[in-house]
Image (cartoon, rainbow, N blue to C red):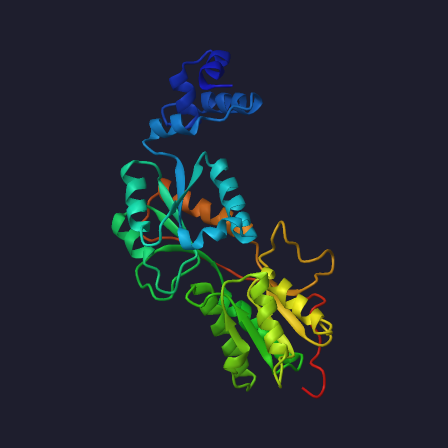
Length: 343
């Protein structure tokens, strides 16, 4: 079904049908309702390219992915985020495109996309503490929104973020309430803003409990299964090993569990583990009873909300960018228990 066929079925001009579907005020309410009902009945979806020509917009949202983070494209967290964002874009009649560029060339890539009229807005992911892309996009003047925040940037920008500091503060308190005092942190790269905030939450809760942070129990690297396994294995060999471990991702937590089992220990009995799990579609945290105690937030939902906010900014420009803080839920699973006496 295309616009011409739909117009013929309604005995209306293509212009009238197009204007009815795009909400032009000169089309009567009765005609608009008739056209919309027929579009639903015949499963008609406007061609986004043609709609873009009519509105002066590309009706495309862009992502620019630096080479150093291209591994993110096979990360289930990235996949769920894109699924949520693309669903919201499709519902609003927008497409999404991805561009991979060499590190340091992001500014040139953004300017090229905009000069060609290829995109109406940009989604920025994985912000660092001092994120250079935010000032660039503010200077260019294109609508954009950040998945996360950048602590070192004072310029205004729109964002959607989970409260990482409060999430890890709450998780660490849960462990101290269980009597744990040797609590390890297996964090993400701490140049990334989310990991910086998670560390702050962990340290804050330790200090509240009167526990001096031990640098030997704090690790930071890319969140892989191998990393989680290696760091846990090494810490369990210490003279005074941790009795609890806080992992920054479900992927790392799987490695943590493997190292605990290889050491002949039982997760939840000998070593407690809490992870941030992002409620992933393809990496579920067990069934009715979660495997891991986790600080849970849906990255798919975040992707949908973020895309909706960006499209609203494109279509209804406002002087102040929108911001939304999401809270993670602490879900208790089988991976945590009281600290064993003697620790």
